[in-house]
Amino acid sequence: QVQLVESGGGLVQAGGSLRLSCAASGRTFSSYTMGWFRQAPGKEREFVAVINWSGGAMTSYADSVKGRFTISRDNAKNTVYLQMNNLKPEDTAVYYCAAAAKIFSIWGSNFDYWGQGTQVTVSS
Image (tube, rainbow, N blue to C red):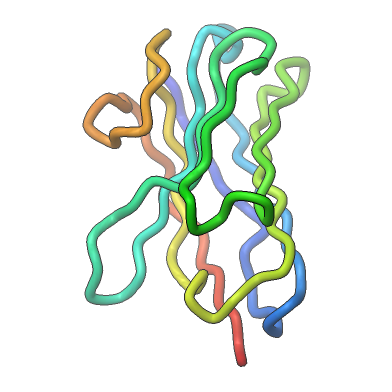
């Protein structure tokens, strides 16, 4: 069982930055692929970024955030991060952290554990 707790959301002006954190429980954090997803009001949940298990050498990003967002992980701290730069109003959403057991995927259906989400609001 893995429990995930996101933090770092908030209100920011367009062009600003935020760093989201996701703290995971359990001693097997390094064996999970970690992903970030988001859901805007009235829209379906969408993939944002993913980083593979172990050292995190593999990452993938949605086209809409490529070049602006960076996913990273610190296995010693059981934490995954999402650095978000040059934020746009269309980035406004609830951001969710998710964990998948040793499968590198961008599909939410492949993720076994989810956090409660953190709100990110970008004003124009």
